[in-house]
Length: 129
Image 1 (cartoon, helix red, strand yellow):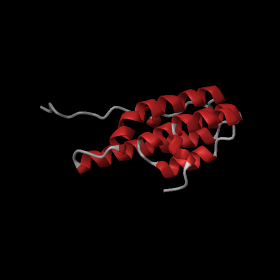
Image 2: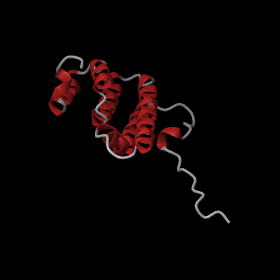
Image 3: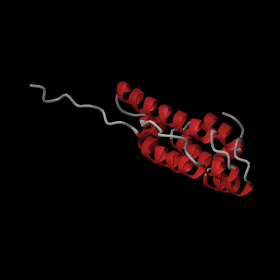
Image 4: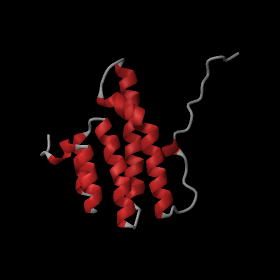
């Protein structure tokens, strides 16, 4: 009798994508990924607890961010892509991953989105850490 055998639920970024995504669908998927991984990003940004648990949270955050970036690269509309990248920047900042956040911030070309990101996260205006 196996009582404690638990299967790990499938994360949204691990779910297969059926067919090509349109720009709007891709942006919605990125937003959902970033929201689902936000708790792990916050735990990574404020390290505490057991090291094995920290590593699991780091792995979860990194996989989510990687998948979101891969999807964002396939978005053809610049405004939609910049909006999606903004979500990923927010995720990286929650994880205190300023190097990646700054690199992604530089990839945003739409002035209004760039200004909003700077208002929300003024630390991006500074130089590399």
